[in-house]
Amino acid sequence: MSRSATLTLQPTLPPIADNNRLRLFSGSANVPLSQEVARYLGMDLGPMVRKRFADGELYIQIQESIRGCDVYLIQPTCQPVNAHLMELLIMVDACRRASARQITAVIPYYGYARADRKTAGRESITAKLVANLITEAGASRILAMDLHSAQIQGYFDIPFDHVYGSPVLLDYLERKQLSDIVVVSPDVGGVARARAFAKKLNDAPLAIIDKRRQAHNVAEVMNVIGDVEGKTAVLVDDMIDTGGTICEGARILREEGARQVYACATHAVFSPPAIERLSSGVFEEVIVTNTIPVPEENRFQQLTVLSVANLLGETIWRVHEDSSVSSMFR
Image (tube, rainbow, N blue to C red; front, side, top):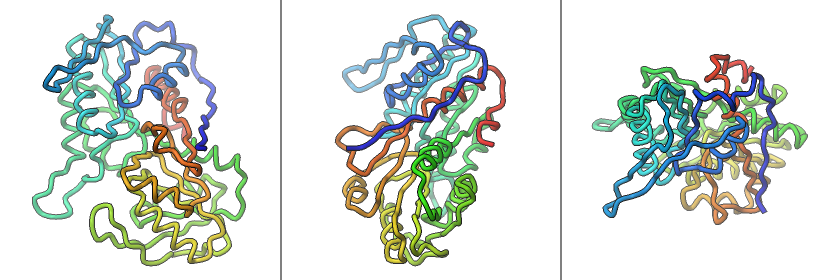
């Protein structure tokens, strides 16, 4: 059976449940997460009509007055990505036309982020395209978690709050009291993320997997840089998509003598054949968060799903009250 857990946070500012300028709405991508965030804030999700016409067009209507209000729209752009992205754009547009004072798009998982630069001729930079779409729709601010690459923040000309799922993952790992930990980056591009993770995990040593990618979603592992023999290896990444990269990493760590291998990632994208790969026995545990909903059919014995609702709720709280967000991660 898979497991679930939640990071405990105590609200740092006065209750805002009676503040009639704050409104919280949820798209259809991850309603359970939105409900958890609303509970943390001590309020209800705003009423909204969402339906589709016969040809598939989406219709959205906000069912309460939000004139002059600060509106927070929670919608990860997970699978089906295009439908959820379009829903977010329509929600933003509806709020803008309803005269909301400020519209914050809360995007726990920012899709289309992997195409963040041109690596070959005649390619689209979809991370920038999505930023343009959300901004033009009328968003005033973005709140996103664990972007695939940090420079995406610069694609927006509006305020951007970038928060991290690492406190939730670190809190869980510390409670497990693992010994002889080495934090492993599954590729060279993730070294900065893994180094920051290792520093907060009692300054654990760092290892890097040298990987050559032959095609999208296909990874070829070459070797391990660092000492993992006899240690508990914790592979850290921002997302697990098909599971090819992280599972190949786990196999070479085993070959190099790692005693145990854990996988940690914020976003459980889990495109086929990820479940078969991750549940094949290469990991003691696969630890993810609920930025993307994980349906029951995608859960397996080694999977643990941690909630980021308190973290997002606290961030919304601080943004609304003009308090520091970065201090949460010091």
